[in-house]
Image 1 (cartoon, one colour):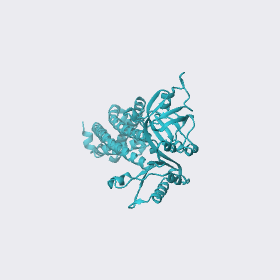
Image 2 (spheres, helix red, strand yellow):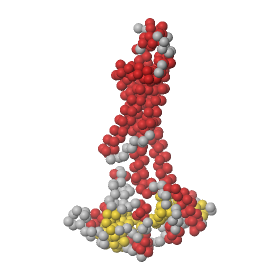
Image 3 (cartoon, helix red, strand yellow):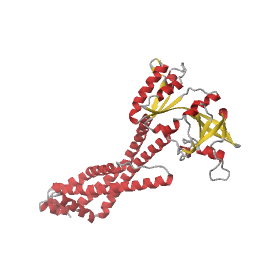
Image 4 (tube, helix red, strand yellow):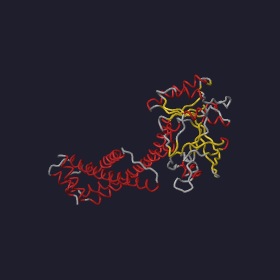
Length: 416
């Protein structure tokens, strides 16, 4: 019997029992929708974490700092080493594998201007920091090499700090911040040379007081911190690899250089280098594990839906017993009848699966718009859902198909 004929007969049979077919497919729709929604939520969670990580979520980002783990394990018997200006210059000279280098120091001080004051995050960096972090300006200019060389008392303000001190550009009391002076705690007075573009609010800030954006940050040249008793050495050094392909080469070269310049502690590196690539791998692993676990729990509903499909098909076999007997009596093979029931099971499950994917995509879109949290439906969702539906159809459709194919024609024809 040709497969096209089997498909046609299966379609006619489902059309004559549309209500039962829809009820069977509904269970698959709900089950698949639950699995897809969980996968979409997992992808959304990953994108949120990567966004909140900022530069730490870029594969080319490298951070160098003292080997605190070793110092802690030895009971702090040794003083930590700091990255020196000579280290920075030598790392920056690796132009084939390094695109940028910046020291990084962070403080909290009260800033004052025009009679207002605000507790601000003060970040000391070099000129390379801004292109590395892909920060853009609303007004003014970024730091340059001359600012670093002359230890200039300059500052770049985040959007919120500029608004607090100098007003909104739309208001009558607005004063252009560029060229104005502000006082920053122990740093003293600095001149504003630039204002950063406002950044979208941090999601974490909506749950706690920690804001990962630069809207409330004041940047000053790292070299200028020496004017206020600071050091040219630094605890943290940020490095941007030239490309994702050169990350591992850059890691090896930087650690080797630091070992030559500073030595080691009994063969243990005095510095730790962490890459955005490894951080992304940890995030992917963590969110993937949680998503997989919850998806498996949600996928249990597919088993329940499969049992429903099997019951509907068994009832269909019972109701069509005389029809099966008649077809066998006029020459139909049992394998043909079994295949037709499997095709019916496949049709029910696939239609339910496709409807489930569409339902889940709609739910994800509406939830994302309602609470402003991304819910991303993975591109492989449709193929995964169809594969699950085929598996359910074959597993739970096999028993009804076998029962239909094994019916004795004489007994079937006598069935009332």
